[in-house]
Image 1 (cartoon, one colour):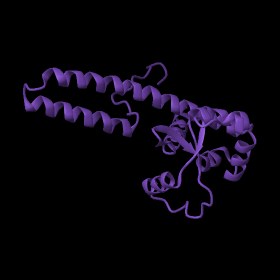
Image 2 (image 1 turned 180 degrees about the vertical axis):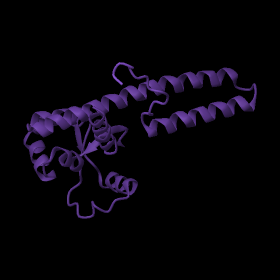
Image 3 (image 1 turned 60 degrees about the vertical axis):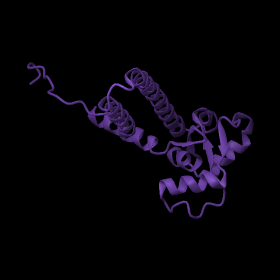
Image 4 (image 1 turned 30 degrees about the horizontal axis):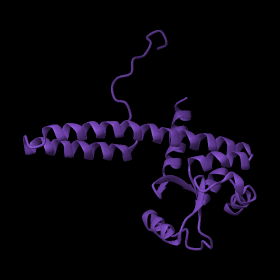
Length: 182
């Protein structure tokens, strides 16, 4: 069971590493999705083009040359050097729609994992948004009292933002074992 949980965490981390923010939307690129689904990028694009009505602009869009260059510089990889065509960017809804277009067991399994990761990201963002709003409200209330309080809020905001990039933390402490099983 521990191996399954570890495998699941590794798979989720691989998915998280392939989610980018472009045009204020969380997206995944065609080449990353194709790799995870075990198909060629060319084949994935063919299926999307054949089923164009299923992919409106809020589900899938083509990156502009500038967006593509910015993304390449952020990722700092040279493996995209020979790309002829600009990549397709799929939003969460577009990834969900891919499951109806790519009908293999692998595609279905990967799609389920990706949708779960997107859901976790949304839940996590909502939780932190509430905390940041409360901090902002408190900050307004104590404004002008002391400089130390403002510094505390700055540090708290930095910690929350840093924590959101780190991911889930491991639990610490002692594990209680059933004495009959030992």
